[in-house]
Length: 277
Length: 161
Ligand SMILES: Cc1cc2nc3c(=O)[nH]c(=O)nc-3n(C[C@H](O)[C@H](O)[C@H](O)COP(=O)(O)OP(=O)(O)OC[C@H]3O[C@@H](n4cnc5c(N)ncnc54)[C@H](O)[C@@H]3O)c2cc1C
Image (cartoon, rainbow over all chains, first blue to last red):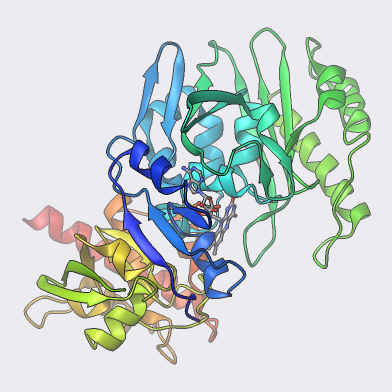
């Protein structure tokens, strides 16, 4: 399978990338592990690709002003092997190891995954649970979009067509935070049939995010309220599990019916809460 | 419209004009005639096309040749040196790690990436690393043994030198 013809430009700065995006029908190429398969199937036929793989610094991972900053072009493997991440954000180390397979992790990027916003992708749940902000840049400069406002629907985000994601910024959790990512993977593709990311802070605040369940990844405020500030025990876990997914339209497809997926999501929430107990 | 690329494949430098839509696997197989890299599913699932790009295991059916400009590439053809098999190739031979052999180049290239990071992998590490490589003969047990053989051989050689 061969993609339709397109023009190709490799840029070396974010400004060049933004300038190139002013043309209609131009798409950013990062790791290519969502875009190229779609182009080979001719589901996607952009007239031009702008390769951001050569932008210096866009893969960097660092600590800055109390935040962990992950460059948009950092690969899943870059994040998984990074000691700063292992130290401050073990949620990302654990979750990155569950994305696809080794080869996919070597090329797929966090920025590409967030921009693509596959309803079953892993990063969206993790960035939501970690309370991250997505830093984007466009012709009018930079802005930060809280992860809770970023995912707007099926494959849809708050990103404007001429904006590029430059980084993900996560406040460094205070000592004593516990977290986990629990995923039921579709056995062939490894995408989540249902997955739950939980971050429990030392003060009892609890962030709970799901992916693979609805049209986009989301924070479950009902479940969060049932357990935030309370001891995690059988009663509060059950209360959170009962409160979860209230008002959420749960997806149904040939892998999992709505009822089965809802069941899985609740089981994986329960597992996650037991892990952060 | 063509774009010029420069790549180093198995230590040899090449430069060609390629169409942007040319997949790296087709560049290797059809332009350079390195047919050891196989096309299995052509949908980034099976791992038969795995090579190393700058040392990292890569499914090259999901990469454009233009993206490889300036990169160091190793294919299965570049793994043995001076006619001596790489420990992984020897391991697959010794432990019956292949049946039909179609998935073998990809299995070996993926395992080679694992051993760079994790020279003494557990069985679990090996199975996790090979998750993106399918063997339709289902010969997974012997594939795991072959990788264990290579890991042992490499670590013993490291002690001797
Ligand atoms: C076999 C296989 C298994 C997979 N399994 C999983 C899995 O289990 N879990 C999972 O989460 N994912 C999985 N993936 C998807 C993988 O993680 C993708 O790499 C990722 O979703 C997209 O990242 P990319 O860098 O490859 O983006 P690309 O494919 O390059 O781009 C994807 C989209 O994002 C846009 N884009 C890219 N970067 C930016 C940016 N910085 N700013 C704005 N827009 C941008 C592109 O224009 C394009 O529309 C799998 C993929 C494959 C091939």
